[in-house]
Length: 315
Image (cartoon, rainbow, N blue to C red; front, side, top):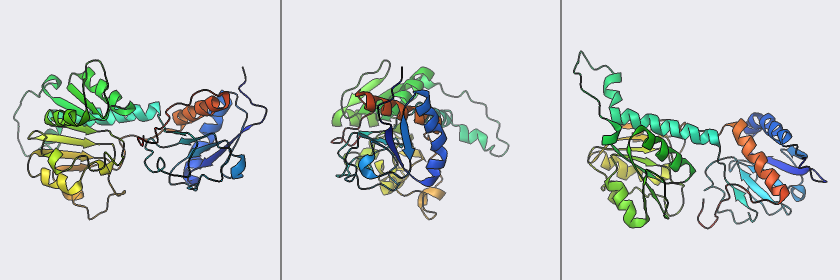
């Protein structure tokens, strides 16, 4: 059955030209798949726009002229750069892309196994050393994930299936089979103290910025490893550099306060730091376009939108 309204949905693509070149065909295909009557463009009169497909680094920063706006559909998983915009009064939906989730699971699982198995020591082939030793088993290693949202929960479940002892921490109470779920400030201390490997998958808010400060880094076990594919500002950089001299053995970092990471930043040359260039996961246009199309369909049909952001919480 057609979802076409009497008038086509007016959809503004408000992102960079490069993203338009990548997303135009997948979006049109996704809208056509659901038989949507629409007008999709990079320029439309603001008072005629029903939906904005949005990237925070795009041309729209003031939402006030968009007087009939039904929703803003974020292209990025993170919404910290738009959630606090006072001119935005329409609903805001974040991007939850199945391909992005799978990519994050693979990055987290891969780097967890890398550090768990001590793969670096074997890959670099040091000298003529031939000292066979049985690698550890996952059941002997404790992994803690800070953040049990869509991405954090998917990663926790994948690590649990491999056999790791997995705990997850969130601000509010969560439950997940096989996962030790901790919450609140007391739970955060417990989560850190049991983290042989710590994975950061929290959103960036005023409450989570510098969450890993000197005091909290000191709670980690000696020889612990940090993986941060979440947000760069979750960690106090200077405090991390000090912790690497004490109890933290290694940090694998995919996100940073300034990106690209400045060439003079000490992370680049630190022997206990691995830098990856924000590649842990990326929204895939084909699957993301279907998520956007479904939310447009819901908005036209008067159904609840998917992945709505709680503007007071910031995510």
